Amino acid sequence: MLFRSVQTGLDVLAAANFAPLKGLRIGLVTNHTGRAKNGATTIDLLFKAPDVKLVSLFSPEHGIRGILDANVPSSKDDVTGLPIHSLYGDTQRPTAAMLADVDAMVIDLQDIGARFYTYPTTLAYVMEECAKAKKKVIVLDRPNPIGGVAIEGPGLDAASTSFVGYFAGMPTRHGMTLGELAKLFNAEKKMGADLTVIAMKNWRRDMWFDETGLTWINPSPNMRNLYEATLYPGVGSIEYANVSVGRGTDTPFEQIGAPWIRGQELSDALNA
Image: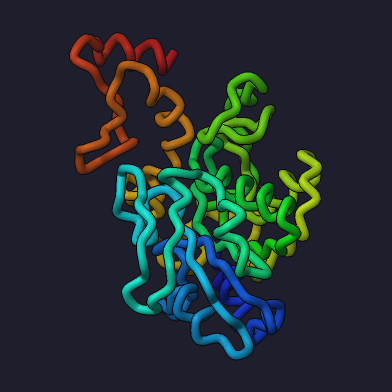
């Protein structure tokens, strides 16, 4: 089936000549996945946008370039000279000092569709702190790469919420976009955030990423294609057990293994 090419929230914002951001001092939570359909980065577009003042950048897990598998240090952007505040290092939340000189926080990240990916929690923590500081939050929506129809897996126990599981009751495969999660968190957690979601155009809930017309960009070092993203909600669910899920190989999340596993017996049990 052929679909019209999806316009992300960033593309929609750019088509509107960044009108929702006019006159605002902006902090931007993004990484290498923040790109317009023409390849321009969210950082560059907002830095050059008329009547918009981009004052600071904020990095989630894996860093602003998406290549780190460790704590992310705060630094400075080589191109714009803007400070990059880490939200995956000494703090996982923007501090009052980080938010002092911004009017609004813009969030543009490509999520993967699984509860334990950390970008939704970063989103939620930013929203919580912005609500306290009376700062606006503007989410530029992007597709759920594994679709918005199927919902699978157990709900998260309230006692087990953490940075890899923010919202109690959420199933492993949640079927929502980051913008939809922002609305859910704001309402159900009663955050009181001044939230705007810039919706996509032409996205349908039954779309997989390879039907969107968008270019795949690895959202993290070990998430290298749609096949791995599809397997991730299941394979990633057992990552904290004493088995390997393929990290360090050419096919992370496409396999599981351990020296003590009897492969054929495991396969027969799973297939049964």
